[in-house]
Image 1 (cartoon, rainbow, N blue to C red):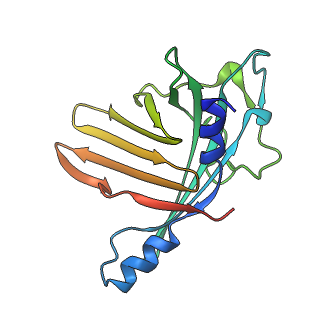
Image 2: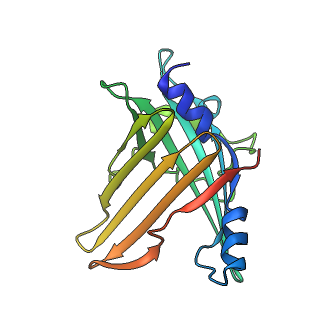
Length: 186
């Protein structure tokens, strides 16, 4: 198994942060939303994929609950190896004609055309550094002069650590510096 295959095996599946939420409630300090990630390989949903394509498109379904508020944030990511045999994450735009509710791994009717997929021009690709099967990466993206997005991830065999923080004029407007800790449930 090469580095990219090991990474994708660790990344894909169903994860939630129920353990983190339970611990925070016991400590009387609930700071994170209840969260769930469903990550799946989407290459079979993409038509016109080049025959020699070596990367993995992944649909990441993210579900968040904080009190009565619920939010769905799906993403399309491409993971591939760079010239240094490191995993690189690139973010792609979800086509405008697909709702976020329909952009799911279990949607058998979901089809994307490789020739029309657009890489996000706002997201700075993230390079993961691997040591003993643990992958860590950080990306700093500027969505505008005032808005900065910082993504930090640590991917282990059955655990994902994800910190996503939006800053506007250097002040946090959304997100958590302390990561959401996702444990594999499937």
